Amino acid sequence: MLLFAPLATLSPPHRARCPPIACCGAAAGGFSSAALTLELQRRGLQTALEDLAEDGPSAFKSPTKVIEYVMVNLQHNAGGIAEAFRFAARSPGQSSFVSGMALSDKRVAWRTAKFIGGYVSGRAVGLDDFTAEVEEHYSWLLGCTA
Image (tube, rainbow, N blue to C red):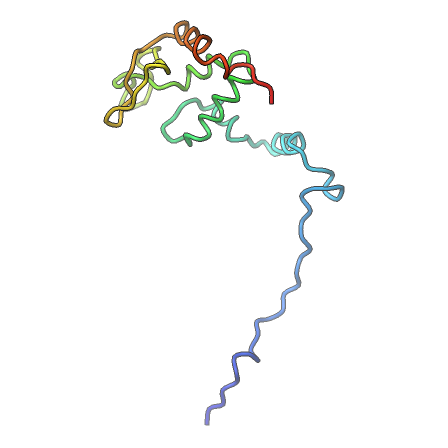
């Protein structure tokens, strides 16, 4: 003879609950971006933007993070235009297929860039022409305050 107990009477073993971790307020010593930066440095970690600054452009980087990185540099760093140029698209065929290394120091100008058939197309410019273009047509991106 088999006896079946109702499922409601069966319960998993009791586990003690841990108190929630406070991530802000006086209990946690306050939360701020400065505190987060110090903690990242203490642990030897980098933010996604610091990682981009160190590694440079890559097809494996998040486009959202790349744009955020370029905009932050344009707004807050004196060398922001040079960083924007570093991350600007190269003309097709201007990098090694095997290593990804640049075969040219020119980039596609922002103003004339087009996306055609999966490739970027437009006038290739050097850093000086790129700087002049950004200062003339995109000056509202430079030196913003947050």
